[in-house]
Length: 86
Image 1 (tube, rainbow, N blue to C red):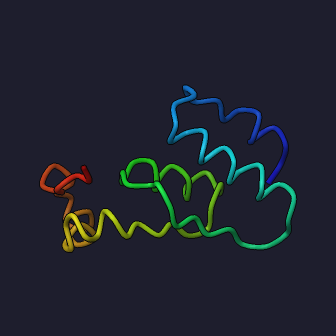
Image 2 (tube, helix red, strand yellow; image 1 turned 30 degrees about the horizontal axis):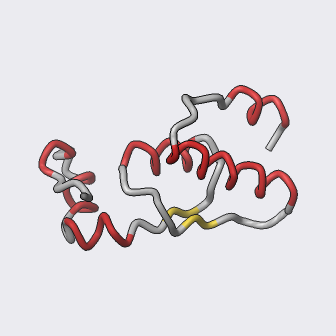
């Protein structure tokens, strides 16, 4: 990852984005794939993190428990039907 890509990533600093930024900072320091398995419960956040190469894999256990079919719903273009995590 080039430094300018990380500098360009400046979303509002809420709790979720701070955690993602911590993962980005960690990824800058190592030359290994990074997997995040905690506190990413929204599909949009996971998709953004993977598309921008901030992470290579996102584990979404709580989202899966809330809606075991959420992956199929994403594939079918039915994001509006996903039960959200409380």
